[in-house]
Length: 216
Image (cartoon, rainbow, N blue to C red; front, side, top):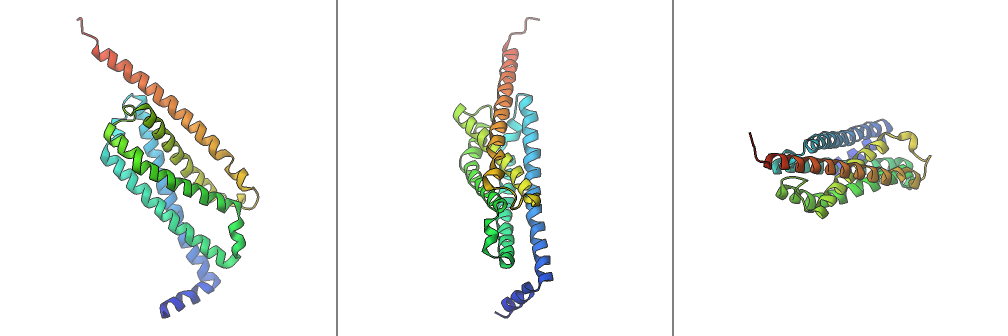
């Protein structure tokens, strides 16, 4: 009880409150950077492998488990630190802080990331691990996998943009802040379908070439 009163007294001092907030924001930023960096490197590696007509190395169970574990941890840290930041800011600015459209947009994006992460965990990643390749999935599951992957990549980048976009606060409505989000998902999904179509075409061409008899 005495420790609780001590912490409360320290947080009532503005200088201490700012330091605590800075530390939490720093952890929040690190979690977002780790996730974004992992998404970028993973997506680029998969794109390179698809262009070669084979993404089996990207779909190894060990790689998928490591990717899932790191992203899940980053998302958990994002939720915990984000909630702490909101509570600290509410203690200073009151309930009206929750009316900030940029804050609402960030919470919405992270909620979508969480739901999409559950879909990836329960359906997409197990299917990829069993198939061993995105190209080997059934058409419906392949489409779902491409869509979920696009939502994940776009959402992490959008969350990062909203996180650093302090000038956006109170200047735009929630609808305006979210306007580009579905457009980016549509564009990303279209690009992913094109990439997979090219990879399947190349894979089929290589299969036909290797199956031809050698007349030499």
